[in-house]
Amino acid sequence: MVAKLLPLTFAAFAAAQIPASILPYIQPLLAALNKTEGNRINPITTQILDSFIEPIEVQIERNSYVYRDGATLLLDGAPWTASGANVYWLGLDENVIPPAGQPFYAPFNASYPTFGRITEVMNTLQTMGARTIRSQTLGVSVGNPLSVMPALGVYNEQAFNTIDWAVFQARQHGIRIMAPLIDNYDYYHGGKFDFLRFRGINIPSSDSSKVNPLVQQFYTNATIVQDFKNYIEHLITHVNPYTGLTYAEDPTIFAYETGNELGGPIFGDMDVPVKWTTDIANFIKKLAPQKLVVDGTYGINKTHLSIKPIDIFSDHYYPPDNTKLQDDIALVKTVNKTYLVGEYDWTANNPQASSLQSFYGIIERRQNTSQPVVVGDLFWSLFMHDVPNCNIFVNHTDGYELQYGNPLNSVQNNTQISLIREHFFKMQGVTVDSYLPAVPCPGNTAEYTYL
Image (cartoon, rainbow, N blue to C red; front, side, top):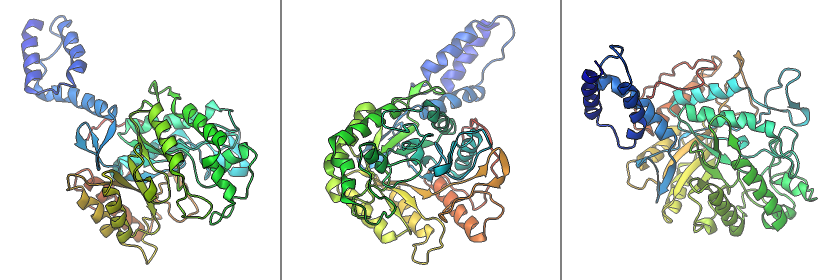
């Protein structure tokens, strides 16, 4: 019987026009068929074979690197876009007080998010059509007892648990990650002020509009720069037990950002030395040659445009501003690199804001060109339920939290969320209507529909 089945099997494989990249993964299936004894397997038709091949193709894509070719990003040779959300709290949170006995650092209100919260976010973003997450706490984790590096050269391996799960769940749901490596501000998850304090430079940080010029020591002091590099190396060479890959190896993390909203003593001055940005970008590329590097300066510093290892430039939009967006795209186009809207206000609460429709329209029309330059946008920011409690949404205090499916959302909020979802799918070449499908809480820990 096997001899009769095999010609049908091979015919199905031939008819399916299997890509060459898939063949090594299909061969074990053929070998298994050859070992089948008796009349215990039905002929494999082309249609059935597709059900074997499609998951393999998806897994190969998820294990392939996003790369840059001039002013476009590519995945498996096809244009790839990076639209999605900022979900800053995936590695370490500040919004939920955990049950008694769970890790909690009260001075910063810091705790680890539950795995269910992380999984729900992945399912939500997939439903929204997102491809990308930007998350500070998957890259910045220093200076408090729950951090990856609570003190200089001291590492807390427990802090990797939520980061590992977030990276794994992103992979399982077909979502890529971009992570800043340091923060400009003195936030609960850590930043450049921690590295300064580690070396005895303790300057006030509460007024971000004007800071002591000693803050530049973060960029110029060779000892502090090496401290930062040591932290980066420990972070991105960590092996994720769910994948067996280091973060440096895992294509799920498609880019590291040199920092979040980096600048100098005066807010918005973009005073980040070329030497430092070049050094850190080269160091990332040395440890992780396939990673893209994003310039974390707050705005486009024109002196950085010629830095070779930088792949992506970025800026943040509070509020969305069409003129600024077009100017930024035009500037980056001159050096044949890519541009990403790293954050933006999605709410439409600011009367000075350009509409989301027009803002998105600029980005979408660029995708019809051979070198789009602008490769995506990431709204600020996503919050969902306080899982395992699926009856309560987690709130944040900055006025920009997006809570998909919250029955308390205003009509304006849901209208904006519908626009975001339509835009994300359009960036994938798919048209959807304004309907907002429900997302289960917390939902599946892996996605198997392959749509």
